[in-house]
Amino acid sequence: MSKRIYNIPGSFMLGAASSAWQTEGWTGKKPHQDSYMDLWYKKTPELWHNGYGPTIATDFYNRYREDAALMVEAGLDCYRTSIDWSRFIEDYENNTVNEEAAAYYDDLIDTLISSGVKPMICLEHYELPAYLFEKYGGWASRHVVDLYAGYSREVFKRYSGKVKYFMTFNEPIVVQTRIYLDSVRWPFIQDTKTAMQWNFHKILATAAACKIYREEGFNSDGGKIGVILNPEVCYPRSAAPHDVEAAEMFDLFFNRIYLDPSIKGTIPQELTDILAENGCLFDHNDWDIDTIRENTVDLIGINLYQPVRVKARESGWSETYFHPKKYYEHHDLQGRKMNPHRGWEIFPKIMYDFGMRMKNEYGNIEWFIAENGMGVENEHLNKNESGVIQDDYRIDFISEHLKWLLKAVEEGSNCIGYMLWAFTDNVSPQNAFKNRYGLVEIDLEDNRNRRMKKSGRWFRSVTDSRTFTAENFEFEYK
Image 1 (cartoon, rainbow, N blue to C red):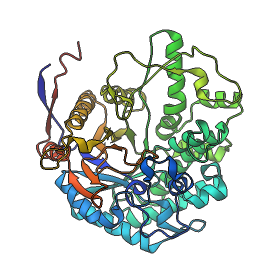
Image 2 (spheres, one colour):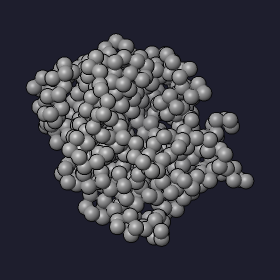
Image 3 (tube, rainbow, N blue to C red):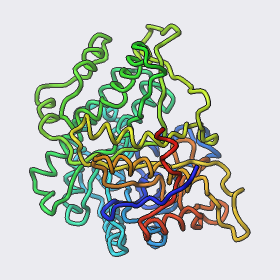
Image 4 (tube, rainbow, N blue to C red):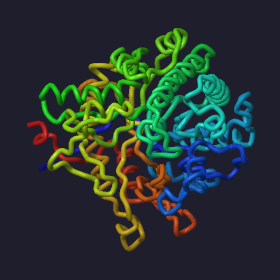
């Protein structure tokens, strides 16, 4: 196949992302300021790869100025991180701001802006305060929604003049799916109704934050508010009705459950009907439903890594408890291209297919890729004589996904940017530093020192020239 040069629109954002809990470490945190992620690590440190957790992470709390300089060196237009709710607030019941923590975020945001890197702030990236998890059951409680709304107001009051994009959550479906639906993370409880209650309250919390942001004038400078979701582009095994229906059910439970209320203001009726039939419908009232309907987002961030492929169930399903898998099974496509380190399929066309879905099904709302990247184990084995990781595989991965994304833009999808996961290597849930994603290496054996990878230099060349090289579409469109 031949290669060609692709052009990137001048207004198209090119950046990278991380989160507070995966980078900051525990410096400055007070004994009562654990997040859910901190608590999970403390309860089961033996389950985290090589014992690494969020204790030090990348030490970003102490080294953010150094990292901001590296962002400039890598050519980032923007950087998305989160404010750690458990750090930022001193008294969770009264939303009293911890001024020491706020001073850190003040300087971080100012440092990014003065460096020419636009900050994007997420209000919750799994950093639910452990106090709220232990006392109220986390997002199972309606009270926690009100506390989150108050917390969001404090963040808006402090940073709305400086930050253009606020995102209410990152991947709001994940934590409860892992804890209560699949029971694979601490505290390992299988309770489908609780999982669905968490989903509903996070949907409501996004609407509540949007309401505060607009009604109290925090968007007066042209700022926007949205949410970062992680839908998986779902392909049926075949065109047979039973396989298509299986894909539609997966899409309903894991994609539309957040896409529809965030953008359209409605929770799919077919979803609530199924939950009610199976005794798993979330508690709610008319005021909640009205709040969701009247306070949709301005834009959507989308985390896309891999497709999901499903088929109609071919084996029985226990009726001991309800799980969406009652309606589908996963399908392993023969001959698919894989990332052997992460165990994920590589299929860049998901970018185009999702972009067309946003255009055709969701009113062509403004959206962007909030995460996309390639995790690789033992990257240190790929260093050249100068000690620089030669991650050409990451360059190819980004190029192929960006190519398909820009194809969607050319065809009218309202996508405004691409953000790589991640800026530096960082801690991932339970996998810790096993799979590396960064443009910048974090050397755990050398005081967590930073070294730009080949991909970091390449990314700078892309942002400077607004061009990159990838395989031609000619063969792929035949």
